[in-house]
Amino acid sequence: MSESALRHRFRERYGSVPRVFQAPGRVNLIGEHTDYNEGFVFPMAIGFTTRVAAAPRAGRRIQAFSENFQTAHTCDLDAPGPPQGSWGDYLTGVAVLLQRGGANLCGADLLIESDVPIGAGLSSSAALEVALALALAGMSGAQVDRLSLARLCQQAEHEFAGARCGLMDQFTACFAREGHALCLDCRTLEYEADPLPPGVAVVLCNSMVKHELAAGEYNHRRRDCEAAAAELGVRALRDVTPARLAQEDGRLAPRLLRRARHVVTENQRVQRAATALRRGDAAGFGALMFASHESLRADFEVSCAELDTLVDLARRAPGVLGARMTGGGFGGCTVNLVEAGRASAFAEFMRAGYLRATGIEPAIYLCQAAAGAGEVGGA
Ligand code: GLA
Image: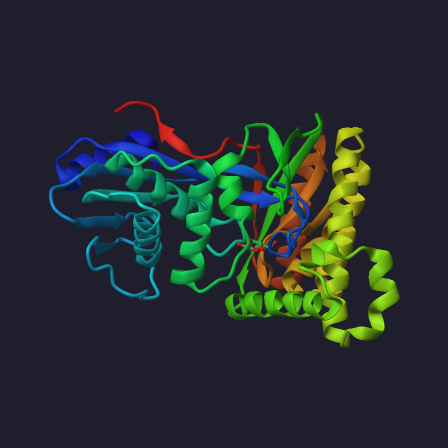
């Protein structure tokens, strides 16, 4: 739905004129399951967005309606209830965390609409959290700096959605820059915005599957990483070099060793990928993406048959430089680096090949690196 259509629907539903806030989904080019290990990631925002139209209302209730789910959710600011397993948990979570941070929120009417594919590994939940947080802060005039906003949205996800996620998704939604990917150090939160090289396209292939294990397995992986770090006597796996891991592998149980090896080698790959990008070496960047996928599949064990099929197909596709699963895993999308002039041929090859192999029609998206969250235009 266009922004003006959203404003129009808002006026129809609530009879007042809204302000509109938006936040983008993201794709991670390389650096998976490294953020909560205080390592390195390389995401960019994409053109899919969540928009929240908002106007203040009298009283202490936030009344929201989702155009995507066609359901309503109400949050009483003085007595927010526990999570209920619906999209409304993100609203309650963000409201609770903003108030805990000292914001003096007021009642509001909200209308939410998103074209970020859900369950596709493109961070639809972070886009929703950040757009909601901007809207609620905007309604009450609360001043919340962007980093605090990203952090409170991450905390809302921990407490209200039960996923102990890292900061990558919320950080990207808040700090992304058009035409750039962010090479982010998740320990210091220093980042460099790197322009995407000319002549290269970022193409996403959506496997259209989301395996049920995703949420529980994510937290298991995080626990494995924390256990490996504790065994090795470091604060986080970020502090382990490949050489140190090779010396000490006898100390770790085989599963923890595989988890640690993924994180340690993935951090190295992100740094190499950044160097390759800055040298204009798109082929070098792509080779690191293939290696990342292999590590996620074999050592971190967060891929699945459909994602592996997409990456195997990509190896034989026209114009491809690199391919890997992106996001938490167990379904969702692969990210592919493709010669721009061959992006349509690539898309057609992938569509036909995946359909033949699995019987599933994939969705294929050609992405531009988009800007981060904010308020949209005037009323
Ligand atoms: C999810 C989490 C992120 C990150 C990725 C895996 O998207 O929200 O914090 O851990 O998985 O890289």
